[in-house]
Image 1 (cartoon, rainbow, N blue to C red):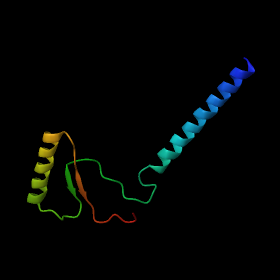
Image 2 (image 1 turned 90 degrees about the horizontal axis):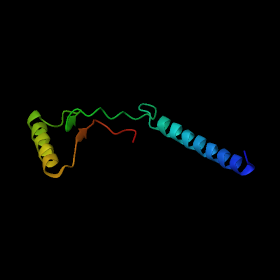
Image 3 (image 1 turned 45 degrees about the horizontal axis):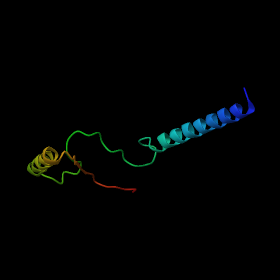
Image 4 (image 1 turned 180 degrees about the vertical axis):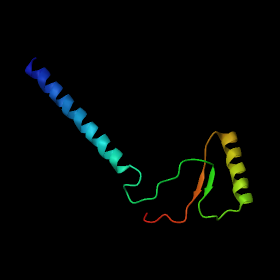
Length: 88
């Protein structure tokens, strides 16, 4: 192996290790429950009211409007109502 090829491979290996390290750190930073924030619940409906703010009729009407919006535009919207956003 030539010295030039050895330098190129060494630098490529170092770059790959740096990228792998960044990915590992990013994954750890976004791991649910490790940042003190409440996790976002899994998607189960277009309207999720964790506070009881909306009546069943209001939630149903909003759900229908969001479904119509998706059908018309292809865009997707969801509403999540939570009791607090603390500590954010």
